[in-house]
View 1: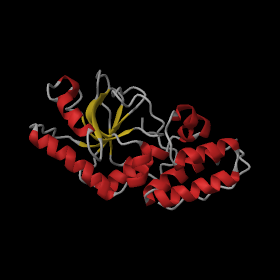
View 2 (view 1 turned 90 degrees about the vertical axis):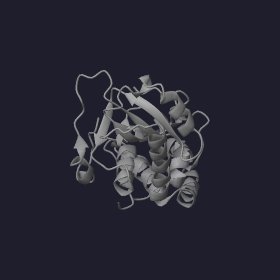
View 3 (view 1 turned 30 degrees about the vertical axis):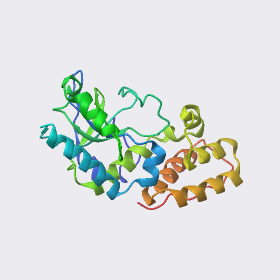
Length: 236
């Protein structure tokens, strides 16, 4: 699952990746960030992750759950079914806190109660299990590395940022990143410039960087020759 195109960029994460348990029907379960991608882009920050973790930690305490290997991880959306999140325009995996010990979490009688509780309020979270996951030895409250992982997972798969792909799955999703995709798809420089200004003013610093890095990675790959001006990738 974790096959970054720019390993030098994510060397700190590569060193912390844990091996997948091969041969298990389900290899991980846990709690994933479930706000719409637009909301995450607007609010993504250490404070946002701290608020999400406080909600998860509180649920773990109240429902007497103590998975000793809980750490930062991701579940692949293509094989992870979460009711209400079937349609995803977001170019990213489900990211949050996962555990091998929770691989059969969906069989726990508390699962649906916890899931319903975490789905309400903000930041929104959901319970999930998957047979295709990634896991890193990153402490649950290491929000700085958690932000780095979110950025890496959201921007590393170049094809996910193809404007045509995003628009195909967008549905009624709206936001500056959708407007950027529309402008790139139609090669409309004026619309692109306006959408970029909107993104810069409405997204968090990291949210804006994810959008620029994601689209830039796609349009600047060999064989893609867009006659359009696009910002340089911000420094990490």
